[in-house]
Every structure is written in structure tokens, then in C-alpha cells.
Figure 1 (cartoon, rainbow, N blue to C red):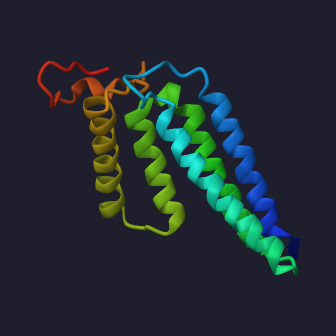
Figure 2: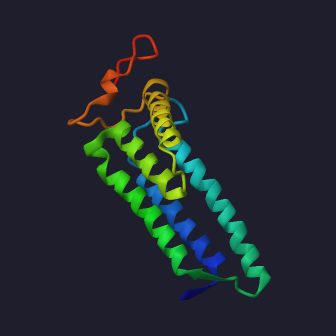
Length: 167
């Protein structure tokens, strides 16, 4: 069974415009930063560029005349649903597992779903990426990340920058 969708370029452009508007609205409460680049600056730049590309896509789709039609199979819907469920589950369990443990589990499940069968590869990669992201956000960018009350793993990691405590 397949599902036919028409006007996909126009629908996608509209969804990007909604995402842009939502991001601009949600970043109005962000605190003021140092100079012109506060915490809202980079999300707004990214979605601003996305809206420019969406506008280009919308203009091209309107000029073309005939709508673009895409057929979506059941297996494609299943793949997208599982990937979305993994992301939603990751976000919802973050306060309980914390950033490090939650990210390792999320990456392991995502890699298994993507076809990586060997744990000899996926476990070290998951742990390494999670620790690297932790240091980038906490030590370099000084962004506090959620810590698990049950399993406070990040407290065991050494601080890299002098005088910077772990969050």
C-alpha cells in the first residue's frame, strides 16, 4: 500500500515557515547575551536561512506549474515513525537519565536501528560522542546539561578548563 502526496514542495516550504515563526517566538524569552550575539542569535540565524531556502523552493515550485507528487510506502512510514519515536523518547527521558547516559543509550539504539550490528563499534562510538559533546557544551560553551539524579556519571569526568566546575 502506498500513499500519494501532491504539492510536496509547497507543503514542505509552509512547514519550514511555521518552524521559523515558532523558533522566533520561542526565543523571545531568551536572556540578553554579551553584545549582539545572545543565546537567541544562532537559532534565529539558522531558521532565518532555512526560511530563505524555503522561499526559494516555494518560488521554484510555483513557477514549475505541475505539482510534485511523491509516493510513500508503508516501510518508509514505519522508518520515519521509529526514528521520530527514538528522538521523542530521548528528549522525554533526558531529565531522568541525564545527558551522558541518555545520549549513549539514544546513540546505541539509533545505530542499531540504522543497521550497525556490532557492539564492538557502536558502544565505543556512542560513549566517545557523548563525552565529546558533553565537554563541548559544558566545558567550552558553558551550557549546563541535565544530570541524572540516579546515575550522576558526569561528576566522574575530569574538568578540562582550569577553574571551571562541572554542572
